[in-house]
Amino acid sequence: MSHGNAVGFFVYRGSVMKKKKPILASKFLIKAGITFYGKRYFSKRVKLIDEGVLSQLKAPFVVVANHASFADVAGMVMMLYPNCASFVISETQIIKWPKLINRFGVLPKKQFTVDTSLIRDIKYVLSKNRPVVIYPEAKLSADGRQSIIKPAVAKLIKMLKVPLVTVRFNGNYLHKPRWAKTKRFLPMTADVQLAVTADEAKTISAEEIHSRIIANLACDDYAYQLANNIHIDTPDLAEGIEHLLYKCPVCNEEFVMTSKGNTLTCTKCGLQVVQNTLGQLEGCRFDKVTDWVDWQRDCCRQEVLQEGYRTQKWFVAEQLDGKKYVEIGPAELVHDHTGVTLTIGENVEFFKKGVLYTLSFDNDHLYFATEKAIYRLVRQDQVGSTFKLNLLVEEQCK
Image (tube, rainbow, N blue to C red):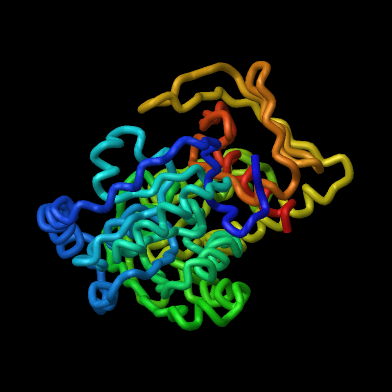
């Protein structure tokens, strides 16, 4: 696996065969989707609020945005039209309907790996006076705040010498937190800024471009909810949040939290924490979900700093085969001072410390993209363990 060049978030496809040009987004399909789905969804349910800036911009340009739910993808399409952009997305998002999704102009990639051919695809789309949309965090936000953004995207803008537009969505995480079972309908706003002009892309440093991206995409949806007095009152308000808040702040036991309704309970010591309709916590030393997460992160930092640190977890491994994942057997994941070692049968994948600066995960899975295959590891126990592994990897790389 190649790493460390200027475009480190792209995938290396490992082929010298001539690659077909990417399919541009179908204006007919985009318009149909907006007409029959988007307008109704965003006018009656989510209430997307924007100033129409993106629809007025003249392509080519690149958009980078924060990513906390798939509502922000649909919202981006709405805001850009009649501009029809190509979205850089994970290959795992097109496995069910690849032909249809490709007609929407997507540029598939594997997460956290290198791809020079994708740069050619982006240049082709821009040459046709179409925008390109990139989510530089490369995954959904875990807690409604900004995830790690590597300098690679800034180096790409420097290379392309095109305008860079940043879009920060507020409320997209609250609409569907990655741990939640249901969607919540509330206002979602978009802050659009021309971060870098075409002339600036030629003259300012990649470091300055990167700092502007970081500043413009900084977000905190729980703070946004409280500041705007947004009440969310659903029967399952906190159900699933133990995937995020996995460690009890009273007895310090891990993976003992459970939830029902708006209440989070420790099955070890009996602590009960209520999340109110403004997203704030009642009944423990943390008023904010993000404070609880920060405490867990601090605990993970201390853990990886210990001499002889080693975490071992077992999963069931699946491999992406065409349109579906196929079970291929048990998998062992070891994280220690050297990095991450993934063993599936006789196949061993080693990711040296620093190569994986974060993990692709959800409540029940870890995802690994290698030159050989895309693997999905199915969690067998310990609710919250995928998030903890992500924190351990991130803290080791700091």
